[in-house]
Each structure stands twice: as C-alpha cells, then as structure tokens.
Amino acid sequence: MLYFLKVRVDHQRFTPEELWDQWEKEAEVALSAKARGSIVALYKVVGQRRVLVIVNMESPEEIDQALMAALPLAHYEEVEEILPLRSYESFADDVKRRWK
Image 1: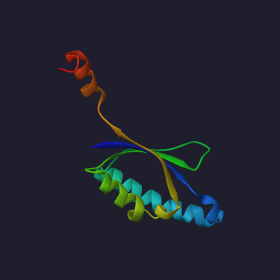
Image 2: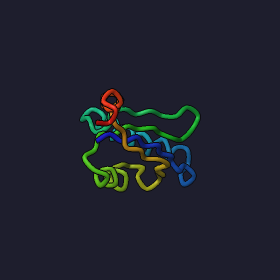
Image 3: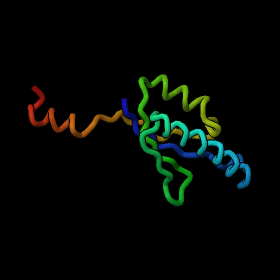
Image 4: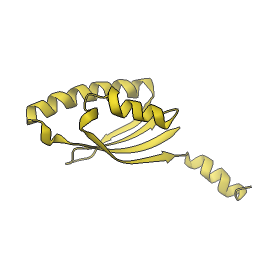
C-alpha cells in the first residue's frame, strides 16, 4: 500500500557538521530503499529541513519499524503527516461506476 509521509528533521541537537554527516548516512539508506522499491518517491523541501516521501509498505507496522529504528536520523525526525494513498486510476474507475 502506498503512503505519503511529510517528515521534519529536528536539527537543533546537532552542530552543522554533525547534521550533514548524519544526513549523508540517511541519504544512503533512503536511496538504497528507493532502489529496492520500498520508497517510490523522495523529495527534499527547498529551504527547509523537511522531506516528502511516498513509500510502498505492506502495513502501518512496517512504516513504524522503518521510522523508529532503520533510519540513521530516526530519533531526530518528526512525522508531521502520514496519508494512505490510492491510485487515481482506481478512483476514476469507481467514479465511472458511481461506486457500484
């Protein structure tokens, strides 16, 4: 199932150098997950310490596990929003059938 996540990095606990070191490790893990297909899309918000992610996960538990332990910045990230997603094509089919 697809989920949209809006994540803010709490940078105040780091010196600038520590933040970039940790973010570099985070980027390696994130890009590896994207290559494997668990991350579908990944964007850094310009001028902010926020990342927008679309993930393909089997369950909310899988998302929780990834967010709580698997990422180098896990303990410094705040998930501001999680939204389950469905394809627009599937929605359009429902509209055409008028939900029958």
